[in-house]
Amino acid sequence: MEKTIGVLVLLVSCVSLLFGSDEPGADWMEYLDYRENEVYPIKLQINFIPLVKIKVNSSPLWVIFDTGCSEGFSLTTAVEAQIEHKIKGTTTERWLDGSYRGESKIVMITSMQVFGDEYACVETSLSDWRIFSTFKYNGLLGLGYFKDKRVTINYKTKKNGITERPLVYASLKKRSVRIAFLLDPPCSQKDLIYVLGKTNGQTAVVFLDTGSSASFIDPDFLGDREVFQGKRGPMARKALVSIGGFEFLVPEMRVLEQERGVRFAYPVAVKIGSDVLKEFLLTVDKITNRIILQSN
Image 1: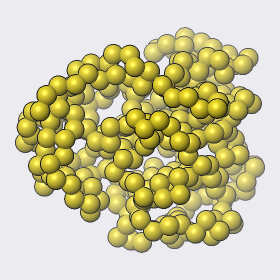
Image 2: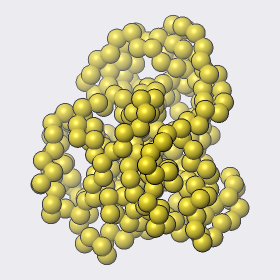
Image 3: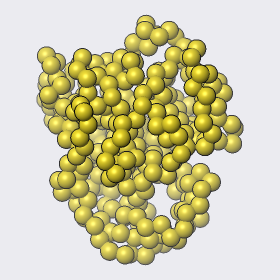
């Protein structure tokens, strides 16, 4: 999760032209093989970031579903007074490039329940929410709690599906979906979503972060794109991004160097946040290490 901003970006996709007009409808649960008891409601913040409901010390708590959360789970000062915890120490928060971000407490909670899975004596961080965001939030839940599972976020219907059952990918052949394999980042980022794609025609790595309300492009991948000064810094127009052969145009992105502390065969060119991901049905398959994208 990165700092959030209030700029909404309109995604203009070429799905209907390139792959037909087959959009996810009420049957997405069927062709992605989710049973009714494996589908849960989600909420969307005003900036389109998705929230899921878990239980902490037996009390319900809405937290951000954040594919950019390398820690797996964390709490903020927004709920510090209402959740019983034991302080174990302090820690320094850093950006993925190693730069300083702020100080947090290390705390232990008695129990935690995530979509039916029970955890006891959970140690995590408790941070001032203002270190990370301009919007108040309770905490973060990352893909570390979805190992060997498949999870789908449907921004349009405000639902998500979670299952441990493998998907029969052959059943998707008649659907206008695009599939990309997850890259293998270092251990500290093993639960983050990096996929190989293209940015403005150049082969590059794309980072998907549901916990961010903004999308970013590295200045080295701007090409001849127009750059202008926005409220939060330089912005670029009409970035062309491709994932799994699925090509879509992002009218505006923030311009920022994408040094994320990882080394792949190709550099990280863009970070795609929920301002763009809200236009997709997004499935993260941690069973086979793939993502599935379909226009929403």
